[in-house]
Length: 81
Image (cartoon, rainbow, N blue to C red; front, side, top):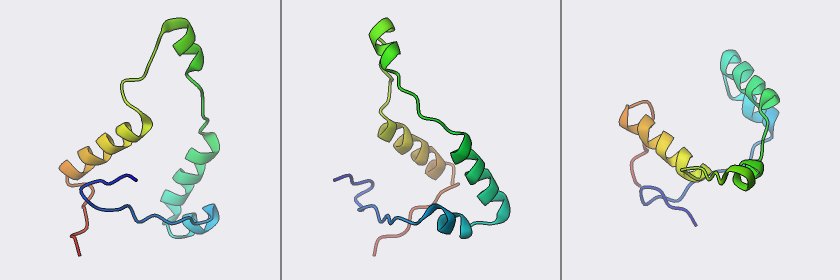
């Protein structure tokens, strides 16, 4: 189980349209466009042919990105209960 800053993540599933409904129109349009145009590619061919391995796992990249946003004050961490 992952812990970040000593707290358990509090995540829940929302159907995509319901999730978009909680956003303003501009953010919803950007999110919808991102999901529609995004694709998932494998790096297996690069691993096999070039010996490529990413520097960070997907989770590590997300954790580092969120930490930068926290450091920049763009994301705040809720106070512990």
